[in-house]
Image 1 (cartoon, rainbow, N blue to C red):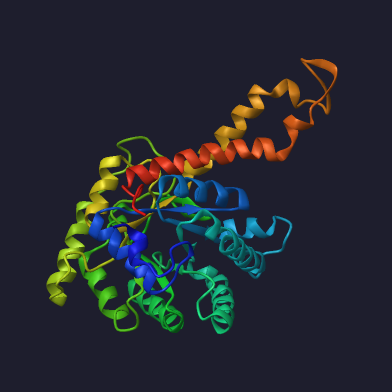
Image 2 (tube, one colour):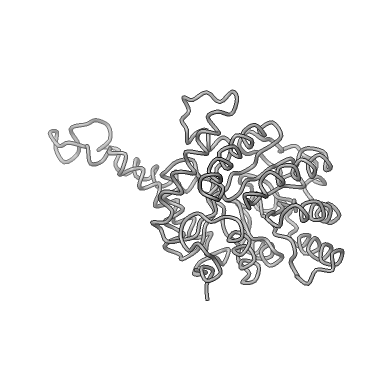
Length: 360
């Protein structure tokens, strides 16, 4: 038995009850799905290929900056118009190609802070239009990140957006507790360490507030997470705190489930395999990966350019002869493909680390 046995949609973008069944299966079988930040059709392809070859579901997500890049750096984004257009365009592209890879895909947006709520509103407009026509939202899920705000504002605003998403059976991810470091314009490098650890009472408060609205939500709880890369020992992760969150909610609600909360691991780049495995054992179903993949994508292109330098300096003329053309070397389909291959290899490594490989 594999994950596709519990899903109604076996290949392509899934939503609603299928997302919930997928995450329940993750907890049952003790694995998590990497959430890959994509910024172009090329990075989408790299992630889909890895998941297909490893026989795993995958989560593809766009940040506000990544979505704007999808639309094009030359498009104005003063009112989030580039980020909205890019996210919607990316969603349509992913929906069009994902079935060809034969795997279930969760289509997600990442880290929508308070100042970016117009971006989320615009995407929900697109979701509602798609839902009216197709009976499902355009995106599987969105993330609202109000972790820098007061806890009550965070929870109540999240509840407001979940009420809007609920009629579409759309998933909503929220964050409580700050993730350190810097990513996509949000800088938490100087945050006090105590703010990086979420308390069980907050998790229970969220669960009690959101559960009556919809079962389709997950929580990114802070346990010392930091965005970006760092030297070993510089970040003190405490995944055991996630176990305390699960037990607290279970006891308070008298739940029959050992892991009543769907948890998310942010700031995954640079973490050890043991830290991943511990977090997954405590109910983490999704692990964000971005920084490591950016570097992996670069390495393929970097190495190609360095190795083929003498074939890339001009259109005609190379070590094989002054009249030899170089088109087959500088064609973007050649060197961009090298980046896709090295990024895909790194995604496959994550699928193995998170025990997601072979779960179809």
